[in-house]
Image 1: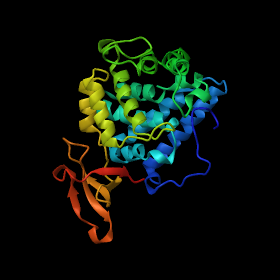
Image 2: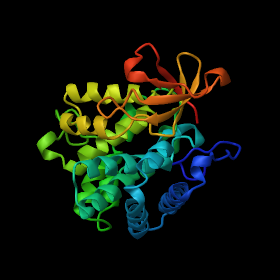
Image 3: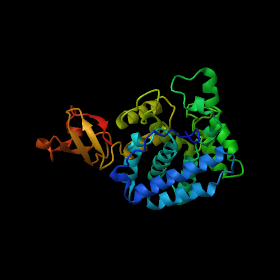
Image 4: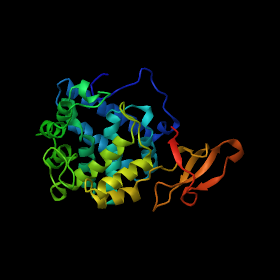
Length: 304
């Protein structure tokens, strides 16, 4: 582990074809740049926010025509354990949500930079706590809970106040149950509420050392539960559920029937139940299954 913010495997993993095109290039370039920024910060260098702004601007320039490609990259969790990839995934998800809300380019830029830097305060958390495989003690969790305020302070004089508040407030909850200040919905910026949703979704659908990941549709269900409990913004979660596909077109999945299939279309009103085309076994190859009208057929795994 080079910087306490990432956890690399012993062997270099082979990137799938999805990472070979232009969107794969920008994703990998952004990942490398962000990792370098965090590493330099941990080594005591000044945070170069200009690098972050350029990453977000480049991504926004390519976002509109490549949403499915970006979402597929977010789905490929096993290629890189929990690391700066989380910050990139949250940026993709939060800015896609923001675009569906009709935010301006300036607002999306602020949202994207805030999302990219939302966890920068974790640079202050000792690696032995941040990467602990077992359950945290109360004292260790108290240290983790300081990272939003630490991020807000680290960004003082570096970025606009709106961006600093995203770092500080992404763990606040609409019913006042969050931290560090126990803010309620009307006190939390729209950007921070968007990042909170993206943060929760990406966190629970990523494999962690202490628990397996949720499948995308299970992550969606958890978001709905959290919003009905008053933790997350219900209106924003509804937009997220409708606008951001659980299984983007082009995603390979395994079905409860034992078949491997390719997602070929979305059901706009029910993103958790896409249309798929069977790839394996060969005797079934080419068969189209509309999961919405076949309730007994479930997606049980994302095949990266």
